[in-house]
Image (tube, one colour):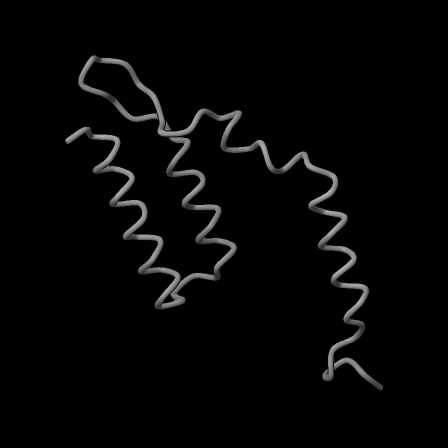
Length: 85
C-alpha cells in the first residue's frame, strides 16, 4: 500500500473524529485537514511532497462567487432571534 493512502486514511480518520466529537469548531477542523493535505512529508524516493500542491490546497479561497453566495445567505436570514430588539 502506498504511503499516501495511509496518510490520507489517517487524516480522514482524524477529521471524522474531530467532526463527530466537536472538540474543535468545524471550520478549524476543515482548515487543519487542508493544511495536513498540503504539508510536505518525506517519500520513499527521498523527495518531500504533500498529497495536495499548495496551489490545489488554496485554490478555492480566490473564488468571488463563493464569498458572494455566503453573503447572500447571511443577508437573507436577517438578524437572529437573540439580536432582535
